Image 1 (cartoon, rainbow, N blue to C red):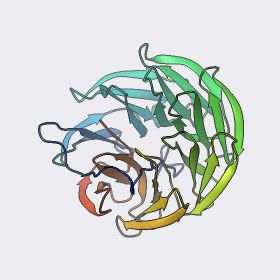
Image 2: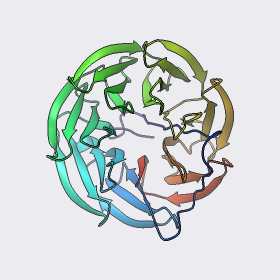
Image 3: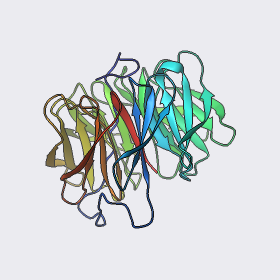
Image 4: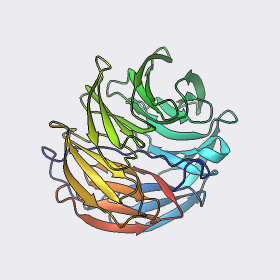
Length: 326
């Protein structure tokens, strides 16, 4: 397992509703494909995988040690955080070619990415400079730099776009950034080494994966108070799906995916993705399925959201890190 050229092991997970979600399938709609983008940290490439056949259709060279990846709101571009080369690679999702590169200040070491709900801005967790870069997606350049806690790893925007939550792994905190003023307005204590953060679809709750505390912190977004913790073995991230009734947490060591009922704040299921050493790293959830990068196994696991069964595994490059879906 690696992060930032092998120095840290960090990841993001995303959560999704299970009970109460619309029926879903890991199969693409007839006549319309989608693409899965996986960053391969040790190969300096991005694997592009068909969402219908689960086959790699392209491998795109990017910058050094690519980590987080996110697809633009209009689906036209995939943004990749090149941790080792202090830049963002931009891939055209239609041509599967590198469109441009956005340089960041030296020593930024970008890791996690998030887009604003309106698609106008891209937020970058710069782990090396303890800041969040704000990128204008039209001009393709940084327009602000916000000081946060130590070694920020991941970022998540609220549904209304007014706030940004940042997991500060080195300081054990979550920074809350006002996206209008580009200032940190609140710092919330989390567990040990918080590496993943996400905001529920209703904007009321924030979930933080604390790797060294072996738990997930639940924060009330209005008050900023910690309202609960849920145990998970070696959690590496958390996020929300369409309803937020369930949370999925990658369990780095055991090779499993923990499913949390967000209503009861209890573990409801645990999905086996592979043996010890599989190292589930990041996860993204769509209406079509649950997608998990398994860094130790060099593969992508696809899980059906209804049955919680693994329906496909796809060989990726070496040390897959981030995953995003068009």
